[in-house]
Amino acid sequence: MHRRSARRSLENMRRLDIDPGSIEAIVCSHGHFDHTTGLDGLIRALGGRVNLPVLIHPHFWHRRRMTLPGVEPRELPTTSRRALEGAGFTVVEERQPGFLFDGSVLITGEVPRTTGYEPGFPPQQAWRDGKWEPDPLVLDDQALIIDVRGKGLLVMTGCGHAGVVNISRYARRLTHDRPLHAVIGGFHLNGPVFEPLIPRVLTDLAELTPSVLLPAHCTGWRAQQAMAARFGDAFVPNTVGTALTLRAT
Image (cartoon, rainbow, N blue to C red; front, side, top):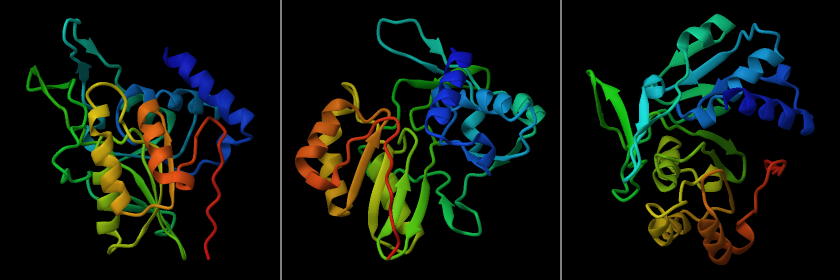
């Protein structure tokens, strides 16, 4: 599965005319394997010696498993620090916010969970002190922020395990209440645990008055339908290859 995912990542980059050699840094949203296996393909595409920084939260390395009622717990694949460093990555672990590219991109680091209703990922457990323990918060989940001049903040999530409202509010807090212009990425509102949250999440997002919502990955069909109905033209349907251009004014 890892190698197939890596090959698909490279094939998608080729079709989108993205040169892997143009990548200057990698920010991992969190440690789940569906967000990390493309690194293997990138290593091979760059000839086995990467020489790039990869920025992560310290919990990125945790052993984790899924626990669902009536199903045997399933351990999730983890990323090898030795493999990353052996390929030439410089691993940078940080919980706090940090900047890239001379301050033009802000990494949130660990996102405070303030809404009280965004649950993280309840089925998850982590291996700590010789035993499996509940680990629903996915504290390594982080996002990227760009302040587009004349428009406001562009927030890019991975899965959004921290909660898209938590992330968006934290982005404003980090930037002294700059307006929220666009949110792109996973909103994690799919499935029976998360779909009941859709009305409340959209109400809280509406209070932040985003001009663009471009959901992806784990957002879910019902959440996207609700966004389209509530936000009108601000909702942008997203597929592989969708391009969004935000011009500073």
